[in-house]
Image (cartoon, rainbow, N blue to C red):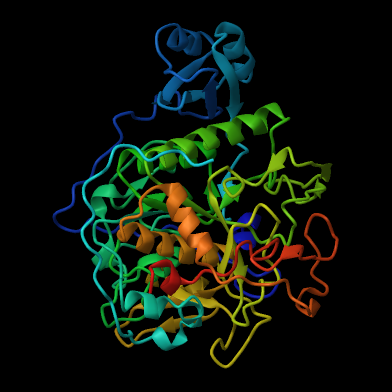
Length: 516
């Protein structure tokens, strides 16, 4: 089990997580869909000993002319070129490829191997030219068969909001995750096959079998965003909007940087208005800009996210499950989490990606009692808002195990510790984590975009300004014995009502956000 999946979606207690399953059996694409492949195929260099590199160019531009010659001279082959952000993915078996390329091409700022940088489960740019007009949102009142178990939706006033607006079918949310189970009956009505893709290898593959969820995490987050109001199971925050499965994580839960860059470029270039990001960069929980390799990863993803934002994409991300104060990092003792962790001192030059990338809406998690979840990371000036993510320590009559119920692939139900099967046979799982909080806010962003507010900055402002201002807890006993995973210091809430380290501007309120 990959440790960051455990940090990103906690199934039970402090240490339990998603139990990973094997790859799903092949499933035929539904009729009427077109399977496609990226225009750039993996080069023949993809063999034992070769690995991918992210190449950053100093002033943007593309890997052309002399740059291509330098890549070849250094022993590399171009895999993907993102000229809009000055980033290229190159494959090479040469152990000294990075140094050779920098020596051969002075326009190269950095070239870092991504082999050990798995991304795991874990100022606003002006919007580009207006996209197609958004169809008016339509109401989605009432309940489905399992709505009574959705305390999380009640807590953010989602049922009241969707009685007014369930979102517009013109709005698409890209769930950058482990894919989604497009055959699930609560998701199938809303899946946009034309805007779904797999980026797992850093190359865009639109074949539906390629972006089918083989982990479960992506299907769970997708249901929270936009499970259909169809008389089956649960209802998402925005049940009328469309879902694009953007698969960046594989069955083991690794999201490599080239996959994440690919995902944001896809979102930017396919008119996807919102993305949910319930993961963060590993094996370094904190990516330090003063480290050449880690800085390259940080900068490549920053450029890709910034580009998506410039095209009108609102980016929402989970704060993480380390119980850490992200505004005051001291040291990192959990990284690298794919080998043997080594404690290292860190400063504010080190950041959690994508949560701490400028312009990203960072979300902490709350439980059914409205308190910050015991595991959720936090930070004054880092967390923007809080949303229901579940908390096994906040069990109430309406939240019998404290966790969030959402869609889950039937083929992976053995991996779910707390499961529910609808009378129709549709399958659902209870999970907790900031991974579960983030999609609540992504769904809310979709409702706001459906109302005609499309600039990412304006969407983020609406989310924050309509949140229910929440004061720091007066009783901190919930967090007793749960220090920061890295600081090992007691959790502390700083700031005042409406702007503090636990809740940011407050807990999101869907009804207020749509003007109800």
